[in-house]
Length: 307
Image 1 (cartoon, rainbow, N blue to C red):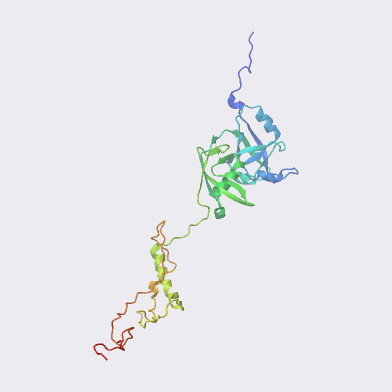
Image 2: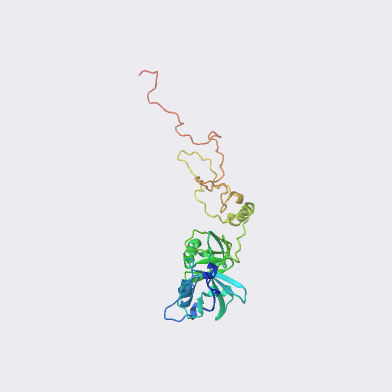
């Protein structure tokens, strides 16, 4: 007698650990219930039915649970984590930005497959609007927003909420793979220039100095009152060598609004509007001037005569 047992061989571990099924996907706004689930829109995790948890618990899987979502109609895919298992059977709820990446409509079919991803070490993002530059500390804002994400996929456009405004960022690069896990990792973050951003044009120093000199003629004639420009008189009658009306300052001698390109850190330079020096007039010129204490004295007592 011969007997055949077709089930003596154990099932390979590859099939034991595999989880792959299809769900109809809806956005979080379609989730029934009294509680507001806007927190799902702020991250990269989905809500699955309880049957998925029962099936995953029977498999020999590694944690955290990460999944690959595929839209077979458009050949688009992304990766995500799971937040809860409270959805209706045969339905899963996705963030709106994730449905846009997969080109899915309400009620579309999505393939959900469990995967293992490497831990991220580097990622590069490109903001989709120049408004992202208005944030004071964009790295800190992004780090806080990524706490609600489980993984990143190169090419995805993620959405983060900051100050009641949604900012979209495209994942340009991830290392060591195109899809990485960002749970409990030390990841370096870099930013690319925002989409549509134009750097301001910079002019050379020579052009700036030329423009500054050209503007001098515009305000040189508007000087008007000038402090301490009158002539002075001395008590001893001597004339001071200062002209009563100082010579006008040439527009080229005035330098206003021109930066000091030779500035050195730790050195302070005081610049004042100085007038051109006037040559001193010699004191010993032609006569006719008053000289103090230059008269001759007279004595009441004559010397050399006796009374």
